Image 1 (spheres, rainbow, N blue to C red):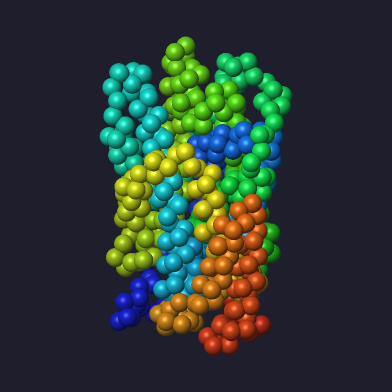
Image 2: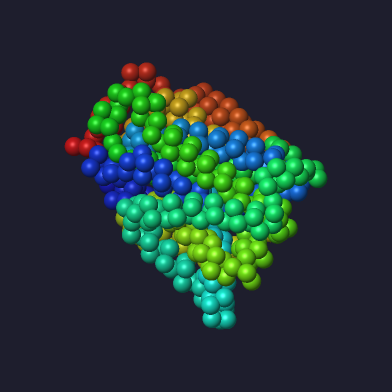
Length: 472
């Protein structure tokens, strides 16, 4: 692979090179546990509680299942990039947007991640603050935000192996305490599931809007699925396996880990909302068990802390860490990238927008859905899963396009993103379809005629050396 040139474009760094078979140590079970850890966080119950009572509990449950099933499918489809080639999102997106253009979708992806890191650090620190006040009467939320954020940043900077080990500890504990919390709230408030789901919706919000909002939580992860799947245990002949044989492990991990966890925490959020009338799950815990059951309150708050920690290190620090590395791959390691992402997430103080979670998720879908469509079109419809990996790291290679930016991707992105804001109820569908049609048409009949893309124009292009090269 060529070195960087005098133009200042840096494409090579040890943390963004393709993973070899020896680096792929994560089993499908470990990946499922990782996804449970990613999906258990307080944004989900907050979203469910804020959608109620505009929608009925049953409508919110259906929206949760539909939205996250769609995300699970997208995670698996785009995760094939990591399984097959071992490259992260920040590197693959060079094929779609160009060597410099790649920084646009990369930074768009990084912004929600650092936002949610700061938000969920605040939720965890808030839980710590309640524990401190319960035990000592002392409170210092700002200090706890800094300390809790620092611990998570250090954990992430230690790398994927440290993240995976923490998820093995946290995920089972979080699920167990989550079920305990659900049972206690129902018992304390004399609620049954039939009573919870008997409530109707007041209207004002459509099912389409709710599905898009529910997708917004992890549509971010669909983009950088390769960041995780590149560490899944490798099949030495992965260029010969069918798509399903290569990806069935990640599919079940995504579906069970994501949809199952999101469903549980949506139910918890709905129950808290119906029972206490508050969207803040920590306030609901204090209101429900603060006086009579301080020990159980502390246990449940510990669950909140674990849940935020578990999600933040894998979903909200790892992806932007790689993206920051991709900006300066020769100068910044993954550890430094994670630190920079974490510090930014705390400095922007996203907890000031805690009352607008559904609206924030809608905006996230609007900005990211077109990138999903462009990636899917580029990888499946145009290149047909054939990728010239060497060229991704080669200055002046085939992905240079026009001044290192692919005009087709930019032209497709803008109207697709605007469509979500114009038609929020079905914005994800509109953004996906518009970006697919525009990007496919522009690439096929314009860009490929000017900038040769052999994977697209040459039916005999071979990927065998690209797939196995890094295993040598």
